Image (cartoon, rainbow, N blue to C red):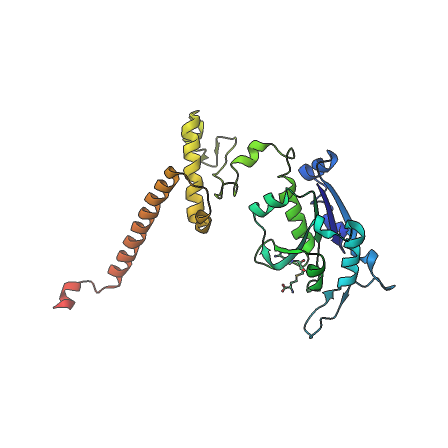
Length: 268
Ligand code: SAH
């Protein structure tokens, strides 16, 4: 896969893209990442890449010409042959399934904004896809692009072993079960006995239940899209029922506590 990143801070990528698995993937030729400084396409001698917003308001906006000309020169006028991603807090949400889809592309382009963002015509002219990595605002698109490249790169065949991808968080739509390693006991906390049983089928069942429990309590909305078996559904139905029971007991207790001590006296 070839990845071209357009930025005014190429140094922001040193570290995220030059360590560990991502560096190894580059050394092995599985992914080639090229950084391009948008300022090299600036039109004036001050190398300006931003200007005041039309319509007024705070901050500066990145201009379209240097960006569009940079991408056209590096990627070619037919940028449709590449997927152009424009990190933006108002874009569609980046997810594991979007990453799987993008990992199929032969060429990806990232255009990193700064300041108040990028002139909207860039998205239109380059057939870009605006993508947000979460509901918060960062100072620039560089770290967002690095996050997406990291997620996509590890899905390229051979970058990490297939088994690690199989049952991690978000692969089947559930969160991963808790993991433990040595020592067996640390500060009075021991590893769950089940994991020492050596019984693979029961361990797999326990882990599945832990995944379901975590997802139900931390991210229940994920369950709507998750790939669930009949056993999962039964487990969830039982748990949702017992959660509801616990909740209604709690409400009953709270109501009783609010009533006068001898409720029968009041009723008479
Ligand atoms: N004025 C903009 C925020 C600009 S933040 C607004 O209110 O929507 C500056 C740049 O940071 C953006 O152009 C984008 O490249 C990047 N950025 C900020 N938050 C992001 C997020 N959650 N996901 C992806 N990119 C983000």
